[in-house]
Amino acid sequence: MRGDTADGKTLEAHAGTRPAGGGRVKSAVASPRMRLSHHTDPHRGKTLSQTEKTAKTDKTAPATRQRSSMYDSIKDVAKRLLIAHGYHKTTFGVIAKELGITTTNIHYHFGNKNSLVEEVVKDYVAGATEGQKKIWLDETMSLQDKVQAEIAFNRNLFRKYNPNGKTRKPWSLIGRLRLESDVLTDEARAALAGFTTEIHGAVEFAVAHASRSGELKRDTPKEDLIFLLTHLIDSLSVFAQDAGGFERVEQFMNSFSRVVLAKYTK
Image 1 (cartoon, rainbow, N blue to C red):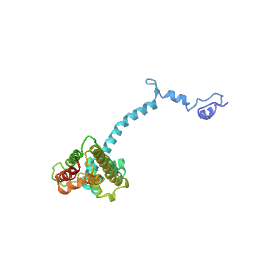
Image 2 (cartoon, one colour):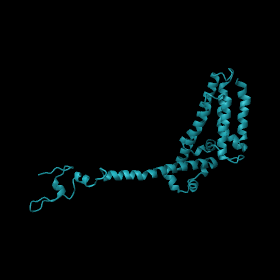
Image 3 (cartoon, one colour):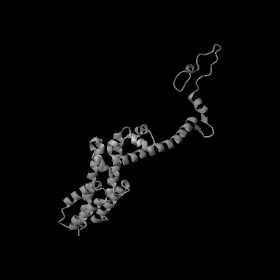
Image 4 (cartoon, rainbow, N blue to C red):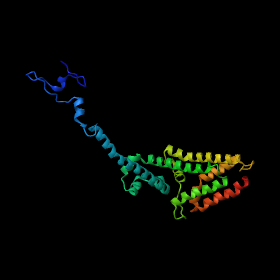
């Protein structure tokens, strides 16, 4: 007679041959039902494998948080070094030394240097774009107010990387890596180029709004105004670095306000 089993095999396949006396040898392999019952935790009403799975998940949660924290720390250090020293002098070795880790740890999170730089560039450009849009898409401020807000926005960036004031240290990742765009990935270069496009769109909106609201005079050459503002904003970090201080940025922006905006605003 064939005995039904979970895998369709005969009971004899599990139990082996019959003894000479005709009795049946107890199966050396327990049935699935028997295995489940044997490993059940009577106090918690769940199988041992479920308990172990939950415990394993609980134990790996801190490790996951730690990896996430290290991922961000690597990016933060890389961003600061890229701004200060550029692409070529920002190595995995220098980053690892600052963080007290091995280069293997950086490879684990990012793979290679180009991938790390690409991530840093895209994040930085996204943040810078958001900051610019808050200024130029604000419908409650006049164009003159927006110019002053632009000065304040860039002054904060300058002071972050030049706390002593009179230095020629770079303070914009966008301006710094444009000088080395030939070694960047296509996506990183696209992100840098996209910043200019986003600035142009935000300034275009600001000028159109100022025209609709009556802030700008009817004879304002709006396209010229958009062009000048876009490229002025896009180049402010270069002005400050060349001059060795932030005063040159303020001078450029305030001169624009007095000479251009004052002529075309009511």
